[in-house]
Image 1 (tube, rainbow, N blue to C red):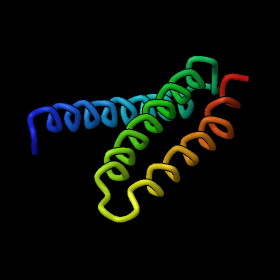
Image 2 (image 1 turned 180 degrees about the vertical axis):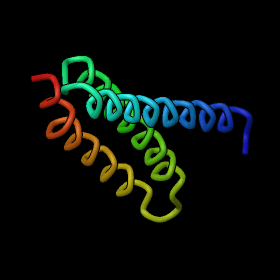
Image 3 (image 1 turned 45 degrees about the vertical axis):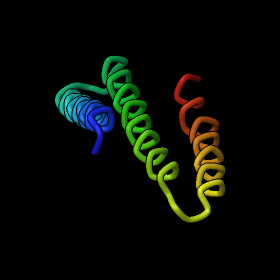
Image 4 (image 1 turned 30 degrees about the vertical axis):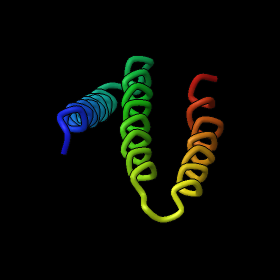
Length: 93
């Protein structure tokens, strides 16, 4: 594994860790207090970080795929577009 790849892997691990921490804090706050704007903001941030981590990991898998690399990348971008349209954009409305 190259040094650059290890750096990205560490960064993605860190983002995944932060997303999990935010989800835990949001769940704890919503269990103790009534669900408020702060809790929803933490959940939104955690969801966005989780989607970013998954998207980066999936991209590297699709890019390194030996079989039908073009179709893997096309399917990846179609899926990312659908995630943005149906999951990310409604969070901001």
